[in-house]
Length: 100
Image (tube, rainbow, N blue to C red):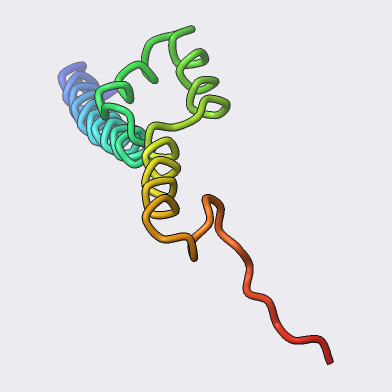
C-alpha cells in the first residue's frame, strides 16, 4: 500500500491546478461580459452583475429588451444629420434599383 503522503501530494496538486484553471476561466468570463456591456453602451462594470444570482437574470433581461445607449446615440446622430441635410432621412434606406 502506498504511503498516505503520496495521496496528499496528488490531491494538493490536483486542487492547485483546478483552482488556477477555474480562476483563468472566471477572469475570461469577466472580460467577455465587460466587453459585451461596453459595446452595448453600458458601463462595463455591469458585467460583474452576471456573477450575482438573480441579478444576472434581471441584467440579462435589460440587455435583451431595453433600448441600448448606443442605439439612442445613433438615432440622435441620424436626426442631427437629417436636420442639416434633407437628402438624409432619419432611418436608413435600402438602395433603389431600376425595374427591368
